[in-house]
Image (tube, rainbow, N blue to C red; front, side):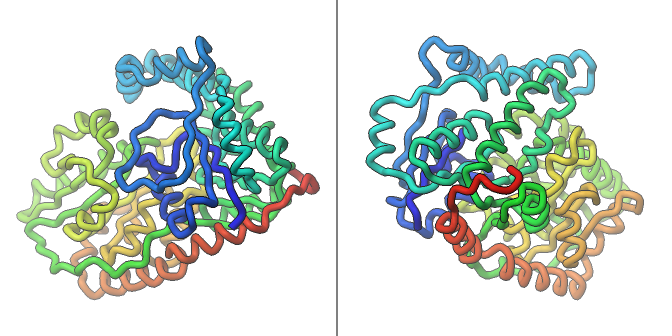
Length: 426
């Protein structure tokens, strides 16, 4: 494995989706092959991957230092809460907040002499970045030029064509600069990584350089214990973030479940496992639903214990997201876990994204059609034979697409094959 420097806003040791994915992949390699630089201040997970890690700081008395202080304040959290509404005034507040975040992303970072010395001693052979950040791409480019080494960009979302706030006119200059630095980075490589096969195919054609896909891997595991369905109380578990308007899709389902429970003797319960921050933001929106319970946050290493208690697992993507192109190619980190669990997967979301295609074409989930009675479709989990066939197909799909061995093999091949290539269309 070539010596690789990871350049991202977040450390790989924070508790988010990309952190989980990268720790799973890198844990199969010796830590002395990697070094990382990052700049956000977030709590590390307990089972962190012990690589050489250095946090950059914003320049002293800089705009970035000031904005970073505001970002971490309670004021910013209250603004974020206020923008959950649909009031037009809150819409303007949201746009200002979005501008503030992008200004922070372009604020100058300081690399100390000590860190520079550590990078020189390490002498990297490849730069790896998740992109999606002006600073991450700019630093990747500078490091690539300094050490004359290639860059591997790993696209986890379709940020190259659409960030979450594409309709915000205040961000147009930022978007131009983000895309410009991305294409400059592509002048320093011959390949790239993506989150899905569809994205890899499309980006290979568009960029003119070969892309390979790595979907969130799951350690090789056996299915959870299959439990007999008790129709007096059916437990459906949602585990994941509520951002990107996913909470709105959950509210729709909660309303259907609530009405159903009031009409029949047996009950459906929706248990929501999410981050403490998302719980603080969204739980109050579900207070009126007796069928919904927000649970305490669970460490990722214990998440399969949670899945084991479920009758079915739920994944939602919002049809009201402002820019559907942002999640066009995305495959949530939870999908691979759900498919490997042996529990039926219920999908409720748009049909014009790759995730719908993946689940539908391979017949590995209950796909809810909102134009038909929703609860009648969910009731299919009571058909033991149907669910046994579905979960067997899902587990087989996990084995062929989501195992940790497959992901590590692709990652190693791409890192070792990366070279500088400024030909083709960046």
